[in-house]
Image: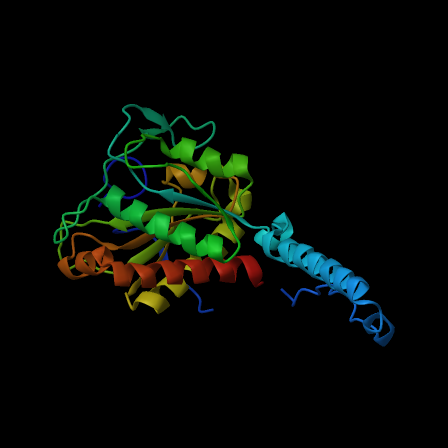
Length: 285
């Protein structure tokens, strides 16, 4: 199975730790009502007063309907970096698995492919990322994508640096699984271990983010949970100084799950679940 960045790896034998369940109305200043005295004024005076009132009302209406909301009104103050895994362009070479590491790993890999849909993993990942971006922005988040299209090659450490430079509240790595067995199924969350040698201080929040996203994702989609895999073998996770999780959304080598994940209506469920998980992480203790 291809996971994250680098060569094929198997989750077999890895420690899997089970998840835990867990405008005001605008006050518009209206022109003062005409007083009885004003109504007794000459027709010309009354007409002039009425014209001024209409002019002021027009100005007020224009201000209410065209004035841009402030930044505070547009956003909820949270930044999410979405990383749609892989690309059609695979840069060669290797990179350190973590800051200062002597161990090297492939800078990127091609990903898997749908056995039914024929979609490449990088295409599916981007479809979900774009839909998720729209939903999160509707909920007030500032959203950044690590790659703008399917033709931009970028390494795993470079993806993490984008999240670091943005000071992201959430770094979500979007992937799909593959296996030699067509019966393998379910979603999985991947985060660093508590003894990670590169960013140990990120464990607690990364684990909580992983739990939130995975729990809400399986609740929304009905897919089974393969629990959380804590590992320090993921380059993108090891280089991240912000809360990070890698979501394996399901198996593209499983005909049923592949067909579901390629279906636009089911993708909406996937996206809602992920967004709900991010909400839970960002706005609950």
